Length: 502
Image 1 (cartoon, rainbow, N blue to C red):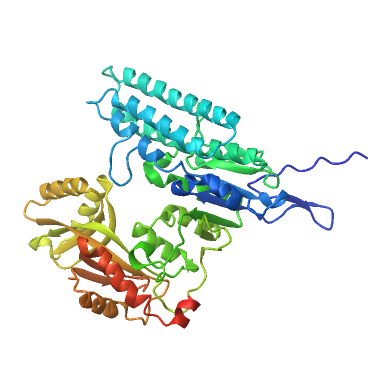
Image 2: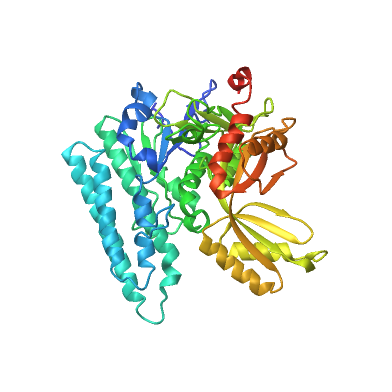
């Protein structure tokens, strides 16, 4: 009797097996999906001997899917600097006054890619293959942009209608490069690593994000291969349009949800701790260790890059726990984020964010509906993110995470809509004390006392009924002082036993 053909491994359904009755079944997935950020990727050669391999041998190396970001600084050169806003290739190409600057910027990207890969790859053959890869992708992108620029020189075509697609194209270059280089490095070290390119390069077919991921992993055997997957995935939804530079975490979370991962892991260059150790001192911070998705949402709202809120939602709905670790301390379990009930009430983190407080005062607002809706419409149109909001009978204040030029545009629109209203924008900071359960801790009272003792003027304060955060609004230049003062009282002030239990 001929032997039956083995069932193929389907990463979406898990690993086939045979139950005691002889019937084929699908076992519970035991693999993890793990993401490495750009800063950590710049030291990926260090991670080879710890995170990727370490003491693992044989099958222990596998059942892990790695989703990688571009090497540190590459996406800034391709798009724009994340903090300063200095334009990269995308910004220069969109500027009609500069016809050739974007091409020079693309050359700079190519040089930066080669520098990054030379720090990772040691074998001449691997370096030559990576050089060819960079040349093919960069010159392909250059030809595309030149053709588009020529096409838009005719009156029937507008460059502005294509810029979203160009942003997607450029974004994919960085992740494709880092994934290719990482897979090459690991294969040279004896790991069966596979480069999985979701960027849609030269792909003539349109597909959804789910279809793109499913096709990319369709024939991967997780028990014997280590997929190195691009953080950017080209799809009909257009990740950049909704998530902009948070797209890699969305790709990572979607892969975890689709494949039914046992755990999703984000590797960063630091632990998720009670505050920035550079501000309050490494000896004073406490690693979170365990928290829930509610706290993760509050951290995202405060600009903390623990996980994109849409990515967290995807994992939460799929019932997949998230772990945030220090990539360079692979034996430390890091911080687990799940739906577990909160333990004893405590402040888990103190963090701050610089904001603009946009205040609209209108005496005729009392008893009239529609003001709030109109303001939200304007903020949405200008893609301005709201961190917090307060209101009373005739004043609505939104605390905005946005550049000043965007805030000024919002002001102009609102002034046109409400000519009798008084509008005022102030440069402030929101400092938040966050925890799964703050009930009974008198966080507001103790926080106010700490700020007063530190000589910090308070602009506003609020705490919601959910008791998961308390927000203190202070002058922008006193934000770091406020974080230190609140952390000293609300975290360092806990008893040693309570801090160890946390």
